[in-house]
Amino acid sequence: MRRKIGIKEIEDMALGATVLGAGGGGDPYVGKLMAIEAIKKYGEVELISPDEVPDDAVVCVSQMMGAPTIMVEKICSGAEPMATYDELVNELGQEPYAIYAVEAGGVNSTIPFILGATRQIPVVDCDLMGRAFPELQMTTLGINGVKGQPAVLADEKGNTVTVRGIDDRWLERIARQATSVMGGYTILASYPCTGKQLKDFCIPDTPTLCEEIGRTMREAREQHADPIDAVLRVTKGFRLFRGKVVDVERKTDGMFVRGRAIVDGLDEDKGSQLIIEFQNENLIALCDGQPVTTSPDLIMSLDMESGAPVTTEGLKYGARVVVVGMPCAPQWRTPEGLAVVGPRAFGYDIDYVPLEERVAAAQATKIQEMQA
Image: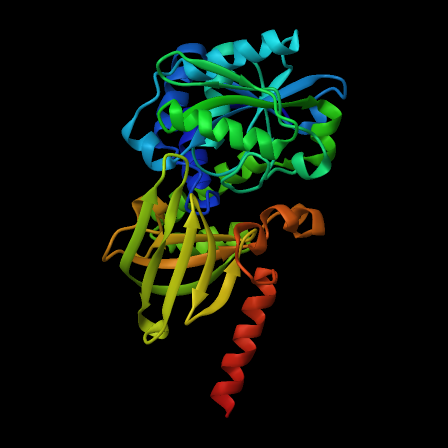
């Protein structure tokens, strides 16, 4: 159903997108401010369902690429989304019918609304990840053979680069190197596809889910309820660990933020230790050396008191967090999906086990220990 997205919806969407960012995706704060400014200037944005896109229409992505920590320090000029869009229009020889998001999490959930407001074109209620992932080829279009190119990159200085690779892995490598040279982050227009391809392979309703998560958290706080419980109800997630961050190793190499966070247990988890390893996004959580959640399921740290999501660049020594897990979109649990975003795709010699199965097994073990 078509509906209008205004400032209040963007506020809620940005909060919810931080949760679905799985620790990465870039803090949507800057993207939120840019989207709000565009809506104030040009009016509300029309959000449409994938089913409302004609089969033969062309749609494309507007997104950020690069290390999230850099975008916090080096602010967008505001012209990049429009510059990449206009270049892509020249490449395609036609105007896209609508814009959509490459991922549901982080800053990339809000960037399409900047372009939607400025160019007065609809945004499709869908994405290609259902969360955030660190690389361009990690999309539901990609695992179904739809290429993400041509892709146009722009930096805040006005430079643009158009990339065509032999496949999306080469697109990722070339665009990532260009992004590093251009200052560590760029804005892209990419993944042009037909309405039929989008309907066949997208993950629907994710901007609406982001908005629902954010609204639910806001209302829980207003009612003095537990915002973490509220998030888990909406996302069908699980509490995995309560603890205090005792160490964070973080390195930005110009392309990704890589590192790990070590969390010592508190309350019922006292005496245990959780290690979260990340590459922009949280990829694996190990409790006392054993995996409790792995990609493609989502791992997110929430502030123990406020429930606010804590991104990988925001993790600090002494922070008290509740680490939660959320099931990924079903497309990622297929052999084709796991080959691209499963634990082994990131270098971990671990079999993927669905989050809910790991949680059920852990609960069964705890009951057996109590009965012994």
